[in-house]
Image (cartoon, rainbow, N blue to C red):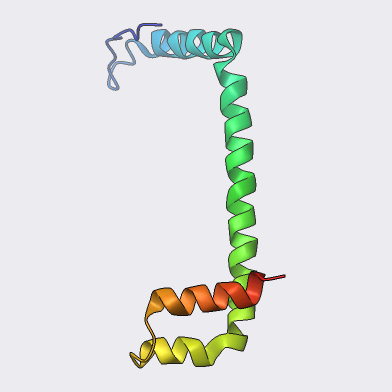
Length: 95
């Protein structure tokens, strides 16, 4: 679908109805082509991931309280951040 250029004026209101009609046509196109439904599905999946990341981050913050000494060793330059992250990861997620 090729976008149209519609001349409008905020002062006179010229073209407002044409813009509304064009938006309605575009929405109909999105629904008929399946693009609207695909967009809805994509947003739902994305929202699920965002919520999951937020929950995991909160849980991880709680668990990190148990590893303050490792984090402090990074702050003091005694341990590099990559090694510290791998150590903590192994302790939290190892079976």
